[in-house]
Image (tube, rainbow, N blue to C red; front, side, top):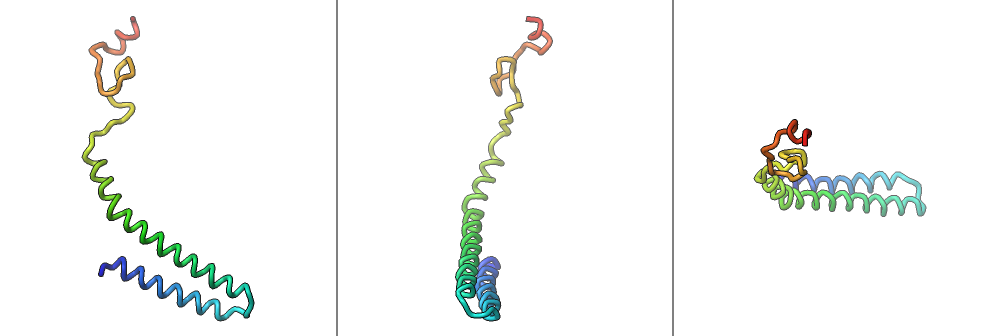
Length: 100
């Protein structure tokens, strides 16, 4: 088990325990119940977001970085000729092109 999943489990358990302790100190009423429900919803949202980002990192980011590093730099300003075609250099210099 990796450190990520251990940390995720600790956050899930710890956040739920802290939320329960905090809500138990509040006076009884519907607001107390709402805080507990919304608090648990927020904890679940954070845990799901962490899992989604972890999956995206391991599956997608590594592949995207490999693709980005393997392709040549295709900047919009690189190697533009006078007709505006990228990647094709003219034999005509800028001064000769302006004279025509």
